Length: 252
Image 1 (tube, rainbow, N blue to C red):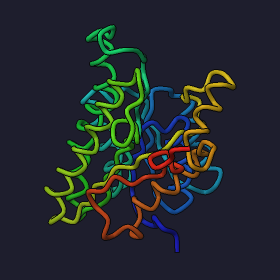
Image 2 (tube, helix red, strand yellow):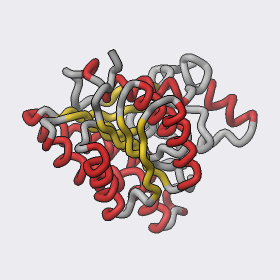
Image 3 (tube, rainbow, N blue to C red):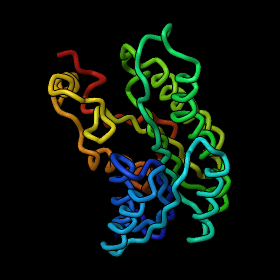
């Protein structure tokens, strides 16, 4: 049986990388999807790929830091498919890097808005829709950065990603009695278009800090997201689930 048969899901940041891989996998496992991202052409290409494999998806391009857009995504799921069971709030960006004293307030707020406030806005509208159907699975893509590692130059990114774990824990406690599970997914370095591996030396460094001595493929992280989205994780809530290739424990 398909892991997400008869489920309705929203995936943000779905135009490339982890979000794209998760959307394709969720559709293959039976979910009907609303996918989100800034780039309409790329989203349309993902929809076409899903439909070519007999899946079902619709796309709505926009900015996840815009509250009206967060609301519109949920309205699209309800209007197109009848409700919402799963949300993977995956949109985010590393953003500008550098020491905190040299960071502008605008840079700080940009990282927090993209990485954390967008998750708040998504959850604000996703939770009531899920509760209408008796619960569901709410997932935030966080990071080991700001949780098990402090990476120089990444203060704003780390603060946003650490904030997601606190948000996860509170929402899990608040809504567990209503059948809503809330979890954070913590990938390691992943080979995506947004990965900061601009030189062979940079890539070798990123690979080397993992126990597995390589970066993840987006499809590998998507499989961990599928676990959290599906009933396979029916007694899992409030967790920070590592899919990090051992970067959090590696010292070699």
